[in-house]
Length: 342
Image (tube, rainbow, N blue to C red; front, side):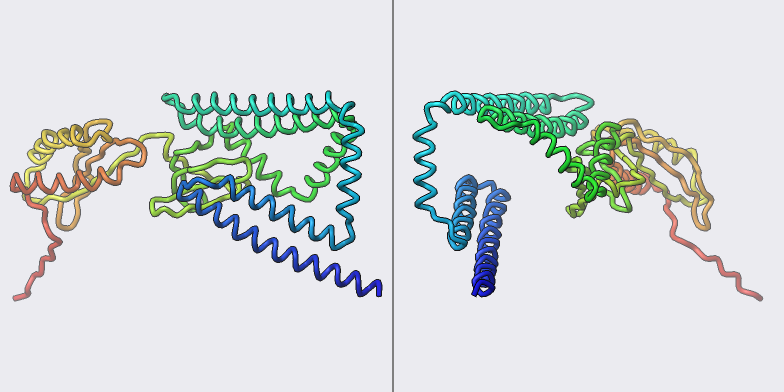
């Protein structure tokens, strides 16, 4: 009979957990959808999720024999008897959480204002402020909880020691996670890359959209987002540390005047700097860089802002074609000379 009752309890608990997980999944989906569309009312979904959790937890405890009526009576009696002696603890708890909330709010506002300041190191500042914000928030919350426990007569020293032991046990079982945290720490403080930089890591090239202590997110030009744990990030190429260079190579006929062509381009190409603000310096004509089978190849380079050289290459290539056509300078097609034997 005992085994049957225990098995029934387990089956009932499993069923309740499955139902709870299903409801929680639906509510979390609704929250995520509202966050994506910037709709209001997310707070009430969290309240609903909380009550669903409390309700299912209460059902499980009731099924295992918890007498709610006696528990409520005991709690009410205890509150009535001890509320006079605990006024100081209650007031201290309210003041502690008020001060903690105030510190978090003020620090968040100050960090947000600091992140909006323009400057050469704005991306670096944004990255650092995100990390600082998380550290301040969690530190204040932990300190507030420990102070509250002390106000209510709980000896927090064993709790702190227990947290240290628990952290050691978790650390031994989560070495890869610790490795990710250490790697994230060095990524941030060694300034390997910042939010907004364009990098290439493990064959994936994209913009850094988020840096965390455990993982970082990158988005390529197609919109694909790749999430990498910091411990796996190796051999980083950061394209945002220097300016980019657009390289345009084209060919003219062997019969054309090379000096005339270069002179015309030197006169016309600087005009594109006024059209495209991404161009940092006037285009530079390197001269003849190859004697190909059907053409004399000339190379032009243009220094641009970081990762802006792709569009500039296309625009300058089109412009060179128009300039050469306008001045009747031939761009030859591939030619094959066939000698016919007599």
